[in-house]
Image (tube, rainbow, N blue to C red; front, side):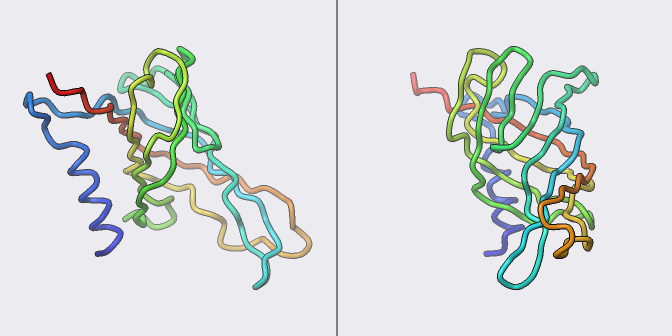
Length: 162
């Protein structure tokens, strides 16, 4: 099964109506910032390695409600936070853009916006890919910041049956 098909299947599963008939999407936020890469010396030469994102998260009105940073982590302005682990990735349909992802929340803290989140999907990415060049012996250890935007959809834990 292709990664795009897996991502589509995961997204459909996560957005399927619940038994009560309501969609399970908790909230959708826009991320805008940079993907940070570090130039490393590898067995086969040199290459850019993702260090992590540095982005702000805004709601549909454009109000900043949190941040996204290495972990990968998301922290709301109310202090609640989650750390995810990738389940599936699919290349972005937009050239030069970071992959679309579905992540499972492996840890959380605080009460608030992210308190009951179980999954995160990153879609509609624009930009953020690693540089195509510039990583060589003279640049090992240097950082490169690639601007990007993405839509982050946060899905709650399933409600216990009544």
